[in-house]
Image (cartoon, rainbow, N blue to C red; front, side, top):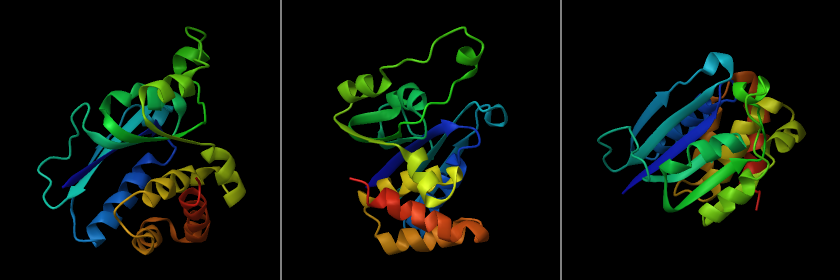
Length: 190
């Protein structure tokens, strides 16, 4: 059994911290873990994806197209952009946040208004979360990653206590409480 997770977002949203959190939780349960951080134009707010694979034995960190069990998207357009990685019957967890990419900023294209509808038609198992609003309620816009990971953790094969311990180990010390609150909000999102 190998679990494959693609995390997609925009530079600065915390996708790398999210992948480290998943890796830490899986490692602490004794799984073999491989993480591949595929940096896009992170420094310019560009697209960033990471792959996390864990299981009894993981040969490669790379997730082939159509093989991801879970796609976690920090932004709607990123969910649509990287949907090709999600396998049939896989789970899409996407923030409803919209961040204009450079072509939209420069008026070369318009941000599509129907992304949630398109994704809902293409994917049987979709969870859309206004993670930014929840993160603000938790105390910081930077907690979006903990909201989304919390929601993913709810459906994972790793127990909640292990996730919290991993969060305490990975999150910056001064933000641990904030991230635990955010994680709980995501975990309890239905």
